[in-house]
Amino acid sequence: MTEPHAPVSYEVADGVATIALARPESLNAFDDATKVAFRDHLHDAAADDTVRCVVLTGSGRAFSAGQDLKELVAKRDSGAPLSNTVEEHYNPMVLAITTMPKPVIAAVNGIAAGAGASLAFAADFRIVAESAGFNLAFAGIALSADTGASWTLQRLVGFPKATELLLLPRTIRADEALQLGIATQVVPDDELADVVRELATRLAAGPTLAYASLKRALAYSATHSLPEALTNEGRLMALTGASEDHRAAVNAFLAKEKPTFVGR
Ligand code: LHQ
Image (cartoon, rainbow, N blue to C red; front, side, top):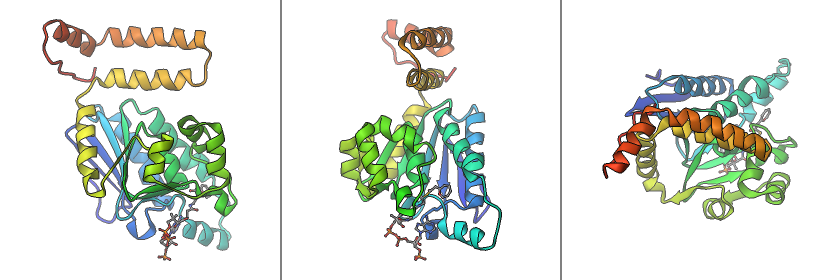
């Protein structure tokens, strides 16, 4: 499914799409080719109805070190025009993750820095290896935040802690990430793949339309008034209430049987 030496691998198996950064020698930093492939694979996963859960991960010892700074400097020094990479690459990635109509798991296998951390924050679940961590590296290279970190991080940890972590970047180890609410779960390094596979399999067999609707309800409610949120909830309840999965699950409940979800 993926060309050899592609910067990002994409595989679909048993309803789960796995998008894996494959530049371990650069700590999976995002050069242009990686950004385009990652963004496009997110769109592939969103459009494929057979995909009912998406896993984002890295290869080697990092999840991602964020923007490839070597490529950034090489382009700057060659006099290349200023790129609009935030608009062209990072913003579409974070919107694709947050609006993905199915659950997204970040399997954080190692350090996630800068935009790498931001992408993990945009996912619905962060399963974090014990040796991994997060670093809001932006201020360290005199940059503001991007890829949604100013929006997602404060929702994960609260405004004051987000301010501290952005203005005074340091590596937040996995155990602290769990305490702060950044990590959903921390697992021993050698158990990460199994734990993520188990969760992804469970989610891929779940009520996909209801998951998508819950994600939409949460995102909408985060930026709207209570009356608006209630109206939106009503719309989404009508949508899920008319679904095949809802009908079958209620029947299964009353028959004291386990429901089987088809995702619609
Ligand atoms: C790297 C990188 C890297 C290239 C490590 N690039 N090679 C958006 C729009 C426009 C502009 C810019 O940015 C953005 C979004 C962003 O993401 S900004 C933030 C960019 N990322 C960073 O500032 C993080 C930089 N990296 C680090 O702070 C550390 O490397 C971390 C904390 C990730 C890991 O530290 P260590 O485990 O001590 O590893 P290391 O520093 O020794 O790095 C290992 C190698 O990876 C090394 O290469 P070398 O050839 O010396 O072995 C690094 O140069 C390379 N590398 N990050 N972002």
